[in-house]
Length: 447
Image (cartoon, rainbow, N blue to C red; front, side):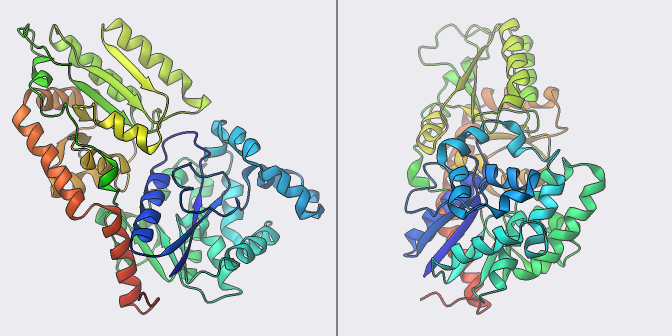
């Protein structure tokens, strides 16, 4: 089957959960024998996502911004506008936080959801034609904000469309109050152009259904999976040095100290400052001879620099050690995880799943997460980590200490996580279940 996979790129600026999921799912679909073409919108996709074939960027972010500000530019020849979609220009745009920030883009968000009825009708028409030139038997949309493309496609072709739903509320909640209701209404209206809706946890299925005033039964839950072959089991998560690292009496450790890892965008929403605070409290609770290291990975934008500087200063004053890994491609993340004792991403917003949890499980690294949102569901099911409440630095510090002191429990959680990925939370299983639902509903016929 020929599949067109439409996703919003980030231009390699920072760790994007949707990008991780999109890449894993396209690889899973290809593993099942399908021909998948990635069709990015706004910004280029990561190098990993581009593996296996990628179409030109649709709705280039720079082109879109300029047309919005200067509508007369729409009269320029397509060749001239295409210049704005060059990789170097789009990568430069991605480095500015404003390109991925909801505040200030409320009108643009509504316009994109309006599709053919909005100010970018011509661009939607071009995008639909571009997609259909791929001759797809099925189109996947990476998130609900791309449903305007679905409407444009359906206006000229009956090709089936599946739409993935994940954490749209984070973007909408960050928008100005008077736009939130409008945005949810526009998304709900465009859902009728999707033949299938998917999400990755039952918690988020109920949440998004309520926000869209839709029956939850029309949304299918499938596992968010990664490719387990890309991750080596952690070599440190079960070593005795992890507990020795926070015992004041320990003086005989000959192996490397414990390491507390974090994979996500380095920002406040994902809890970088909360983890830093908890780490400093952990150090202050015990006079450590061999203190754990705090390792960050996931990239950032210019908006995130103040919180990064503040974290560095706090760790330095507490006598700890903090590293920031600059590279966060899939190979870099796999190598990063293989050296971690535990992973903690104390997100300050409730999210559907957490791609970093799937990655940690695949690498055999236990997670320590707040007992909120999709975290509660996934960790309770898999036993791949510890849950703590409330979502405060104090509670996190206690949970980190508990995890680091109990080698047997940490080993058990690591094994449970890896087993869960091999059995369920892998990308081939995600692809298989997504297509099975389409087959059961006679939306596609997958040979």
